[in-house]
Amino acid sequence: MPAKPRSLFLTFILLLLLPLTISSSSSSMHELLRSYGLPSGLFPESVKSYKFDETGRLEVHLDRPCMAKFENRVFFESVVRANLSFGQLKGLQGLSQEELFLWLPVKDIIVNDPSSGLILFDIGLAYKQFSFSLFEDPPICRSQGIISFRRKSIGFQDQR
Image 1 (tube, one colour):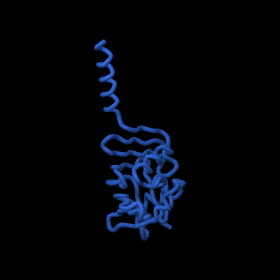
Image 2 (cartoon, rainbow, N blue to C red):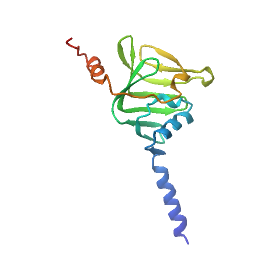
Image 3 (tube, rainbow, N blue to C red):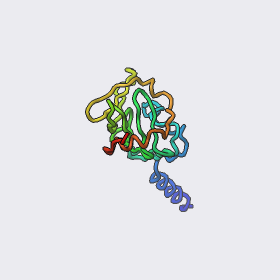
């Protein structure tokens, strides 16, 4: 009889050590964002998989690097990382936004007050406010223009 409680205890411990969520479904990724007070359309529909662990570390895998458009154009690397907590994606890596012909890394995405209908993007030099409604649906992400983005972001100029 003592073996059963011990095996149940070990099973319980093993489950605690596994990441909270590992999924290959982009729809569940978007549900995760909603459950944390963020709009479901912050990441494109081409999410291949994601990992989210008990420390709040989120890692999103896309099929390939791509560009999407909200109000401005945004560039997603094939892997985007951030710390997810309620109303916030902090320490983002792998996401850039075009601002006045410059590509700036998005550092944080914050919803301070969900009733305000606003979402903030921290692009280092400033906070950009957007309407929450721009991010209701996951954007379509296209690979067009990525070569020119990479040239601009590393300082190459087209020779045209």
